Image (cartoon, rainbow, N blue to C red; front, side, top):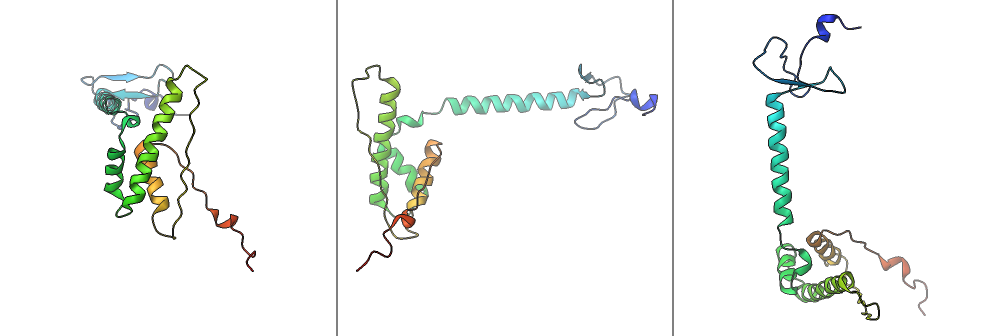
Length: 161
């Protein structure tokens, strides 16, 4: 068991400073655990961190919604990360734009009688040509998860004449 002297110490649980003999600094005590304290310096640092985080969240919320990007803007984003593959970037940009419009329609549509066809994209190419990287980059732009399926296991191996 700790001595009475140690129990009466006022030590900030964050910075570790001992404020037992320093009445000039305000120290708050936890209502749930009297051994936990926070000094005014750490409280002020915490306040500024929370304030900074709130400002960053507001900045993110004020950004242009990514659903409203045009195919040109999507391609420009891909151009920043992917070298070459111009035709693939153009096709994926348009397909992504159309997909986002389709999702927007389903979110806003009250009429169940209207049906839109979905479109799939099949990417075929040599190993290392950048197929996966293009999709990863698009997923980063729209902050969505992505799934990649390797069809190598699905080929008709052993069925040649």
